Image (cartoon, rainbow, N blue to C red; front, side, top):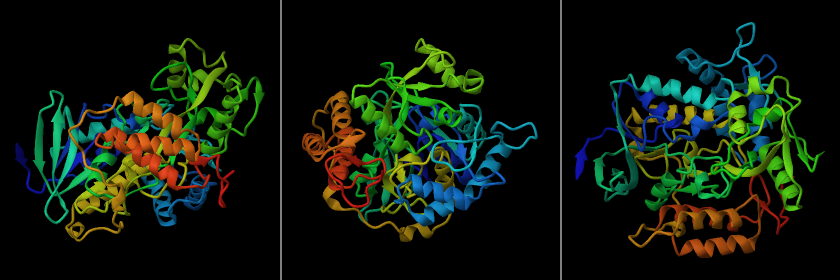
Length: 480
């Protein structure tokens, strides 16, 4: 069953973060495993807005860092924020040089957009399909590399440890249910987020937190799992996943109306706007996004226009029904500046990782930046030998450790409904306790286990701060 690869690193996932690792490792050999073709099912392909970087003459990485900290309710890691915002301009320039078709102005400078939470125009974008443009460009480059062995049609199921608690292998499963093992001392998790665990999400339905489950089951530390970002403007027409109406629409002048009345500053951070939308809906008011006064809106946002049209609406002529939907996980498998987890031989990059960049709420268009920076950091670390000494992440609290078992799995729809009710935009101890108690019986299942970890983290934090909003407590440090 074991397919020996000696010490060849294995990258799990082919979104932007995993592709970045494989590309940056070249010419060192690696194996990249993915359930689909390269980029298939990757949330980075769905990102509309772009990548944030302080490129404009009136901007600086320091200002980008201030906005990032503020949006994250001052819960982010100061050093991480400074490191990633400082790296951002060069990341964008290198991606542009690689062939990413970023939009440019008449003078051939990058066209920079404004999004909520940003004090400057700093979003480098390729129309409103930026994630797809960036991810495809990197994937096309990776596909040319002899150093990358791509294995498709495989889902990672569990990690294997040696007697010393170090990574010793990875077990994969194909579509028929057949398992195979890879013997390796280095695994990079680039498995994406967990939005598919919620009934209302803009994420791929396959985003079920598998990487978090695998890592947590072997004792890797996780943090901030209760900080789950709800995008305030998902198109509310009964589709699953819910189509995303990009932040950039509001940056371009679209407004939010409740029963025809504007009720919020649309350019505040997402957690603030999402809570305001939720409260209006709870009061029985119909919330609509009105982009009719945005100049040439359909031409500027063709992907959104197509999504809206598929729902029988017109971006330029209609008010669009919206509701908050889970969009991004700020927490995840805790990593250090080299993307090392608390388990020797295990790295995590992209949304599966908790880097400390986002704090309690992700600033718009920082996720693609994080994917590249954390992916390059992991690749640089994998090429050396110092990782064998371990990283800087403290060991996990063992009370959250649960083993997988062969018992029947609960229906995913039940897990999604439980999390939607108990861990929605506004939360109470009663609802959170109910979610924890039900999911505790199902932690042998990976989806329910991650849901349990989320609800457990939310119940343990009495504050109302960032994207974690408790309506039953008003502890010090609450965010407006």
